[in-house]
Amino acid sequence: MSSSNLTETLCIVGAWLVTFGAVGAYGASVILRGRRLSKIVPPEQRRWM
Amino acid sequence: MTTTKTQSASNLSPAPTGTGSRGTRVLGGFALVFLVIAVAYGLFISPADAQLGNTIRIIYMHVPTVMAAYMAFIITAVSSGMYLWKRTEFWDLLGSSGAEIGVLFFAVTIVDGALWGKVTWGVFWRWEPRLTTSAVLLIMYIGYLAVRAIPADPRTRATRCAIIGIVAIVNVPIVHKAVDWWRGLHQGKTVLGTIDPEMGGTQLFAMYSALIAGLLVCVWLLIHRFRAGFLAERASDLGLDQALEERRLESSPATGEDA
Amino acid sequence: MSQGGGVLSDALLVARKDLLLERRAKIGLGQVLPFAILVLLLFAFALDPDRGILKLATPGLFWVTVLFSAVLTLQRSFALEAEDGILEALRLSGMSPAGIYLGKVTALTIELLLLEAVLVLGVAVLYDTKFLGIPLLFAIALLATLGIAGAGAVYGALAARLRSRETLLPLLLLPLLAPVLIAATRGCEVSLEREAMSGWPWAALLGIFALVYLTLGSFLFRPLLEDA
Image (spheres, helix red, strand yellow):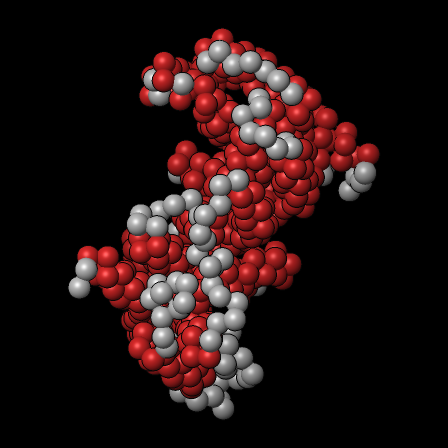
């Protein structure tokens, strides 16, 4: 495998990993935050408008 | 958003213990299906492009993320306008959720674009019009989030953010035009300009499934972020109430009689 | 509430008040202008004048200097009012928000144009620039400055009441003004005959920017003064 091919593969895999990683990590943090906050907020206020 | 129909507490299902609901689970399921198809076709099944070669596989990620980001920013702009008109918490929360998710997707877009550039140009960054525009807009919306993060009375904070949301979106076409003309003088290969308009079957399929997956994920994130924001507001109200209560208890035993 | 003529007379009143304050305090003359000239000197140190880079980059350096000076001028102009609650007082006295906004923009435009006039002299002397295409240069300076003041007044007023305003105002304003920097720089390069194309489309872009933000600012200043 030549070095330009290696760069190409790394960049393609990198792009997909960055996209899935960043969006996934953000999604997970939002959901965890939601669960944590749900324990604090009383049930009758846990309705989204 | 899914339980808006009724206000009375008697005929409601038990309160949710997170930001999920049946609606978000169905939506998430659809998003997952399209993501799997996008991975299968985008990374493995579809062939390399005649002109772009394998770098088209980066474009399969670049296009959906930029579209999702723009969708989120448009939602922020509409919500900002609606907030100044209706003054309800709903529009404020929707606007700030959109800005946060838009920043996330824009940052990812720029990284993907730079990786595409590394393969195509040999360098991470060239002043390609779309990437340059994205970088300027990203910083603009980071400013929005910075103002959002400053603690203030909810109405004040919401008004500030709504004004920034409107001022920022109006700038999008202007930045676009200015950067286009600026780079028009010495234009090279652009990220999107090289895509074959008569792209073949499986490539088109990969692109569209990635695009649909991206937009579904964006909406799914928006709903969860909105609900988390709503809960955070209730929690901070609660914290305020508790602090006031404690303050009252601290002072009342000493004086004793003012109850 | 006063309408039409009321907005204009309110604007004139606010503009006159601002310019009078500035003439008394002389912050622009005593601090912002020396800062701007200092930036011109710093650019000369950073980009060796003998290699010709300085001459090539003159329009861009000029407008970057103007943007930085505009941030300082805005901060100064709105910090005073936020401390003393002057904007609220004006609002409560029945002046129209659009009038207050247009008054601020007028005063800022005049202050910035004066600053640019001195800077042009500085550039001519320090960077040895020859000026060509004078009508285009004038049009670009006027329209760019209107745009900077128009967008700047909205964010200046918004940031003034925040504790971290010194860092937030440039973060909010400078990306917004990116198209102004591009268009003004390219337009100036055309008029200095560095680039062979018509410069008037750049002036038109600056005009559109100014028009859009002046309109938007006139509408947004009411919620801004009342709630933000």
